[in-house]
Image 1 (spheres, chains in turn blue, orange):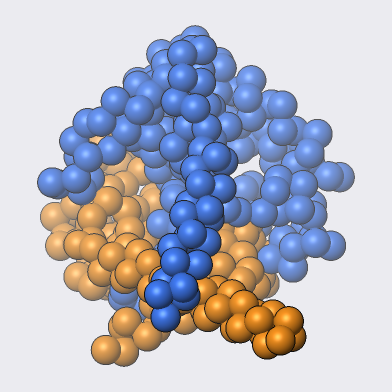
Image 2 (cartoon, chains in turn blue, red):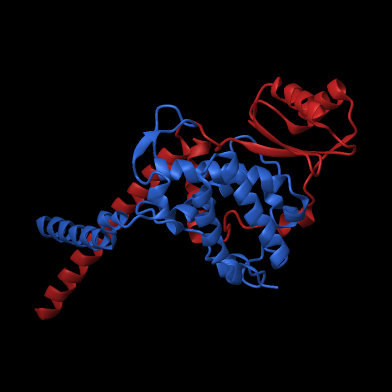
Length: 183
Length: 150
C-alpha cells in the first residue's frame, strides 16, 4: 500500500511538473503587447461583479466585446451570422450573448498577448467553414467582415478606447480576414 | 518469479493511474461546481432582445423609448441603431420577458414596431458561440446538470 502511495505521489508530481513546464514565462509581458497597453494583468475591481477582481486588460477587452455584441445584434446584415445572440433561453441557462462575450473576450485576450487567458474554441478557419462546422450555414464574405470590423470599432469608441489602440485592434482583426472570409 | 513481480508492478501502476484520474476528476468537478454556482454577475445571466421600428424614429423619440424601456425591471443595458431604427436591449430573464417589454413599449409609446424573433433557419446557421459537439462541452454540461438537479 505504501508503494502504491509512493508511485501515485511520484506520478502526480511528474504530471504537475509537466503541466508547469507548459506555463509561459511572465516575463513575456515585458515586450509591450496590446494587452498590456490596455492595462495588462494589473488586477482591478470588476464593476460588473461586485467583490471580484479582474485583469485590467481583460476588463477593457470585455467592455469592447460587450458593446460590439450590441452593435452586431442591431445590424441586420450581420444577423444571419449571429442568430444565436437573440435566441431566447430559459432562466439559468447561458444565453448566446453571455457565451459569445466569454469566448470572444478569451480569443481577443490571447490574440493581444495575455499570458493568463486561454481560448478553447474552434480555430478561426474551422469555426467559419460550414463543411467543418454545422452551425455555420453560410460562408462569410468581405462585406460581412467589413461590417464586423465596423461593429468592433464602434464598440471600442463607445468605451473611449484611444484611436491608436483601436487602430491596432483593427489591424489585428484584419490579419484574420483571409482565414475567416471564405467566399 | 519475474512474472509475479511484473504483475505486481503493473497492478501498482494501474492503481496509481486510477488514483490520479480520480483526483483530476474531483478537481474538475469542484472547478465546474465553483464556476456554475458562483453568484450571478456581469453578463452571465443576460439575455438580448431586439425590437425593429417600422417608422422613422428621431432623437427625442429614441430618448422617450429608452426611458420607458429602462423604467421596467430587469433591463440591464440598451442600444438604439438610428440608421436602422432598431432597439437592442439586455434583460435578466429571471425578472423580465421580452414579450412583456414589447407590450409595454407599444402601450406607452404607440410607435409601429415588431418584436424580432429569431427563425429556426437563422439559428441553425448562426456563428458558433460554443461547439456543442465538443467533449469539453458534453462533460461540462453533464456536471452542470448533475449539480443543478441536486
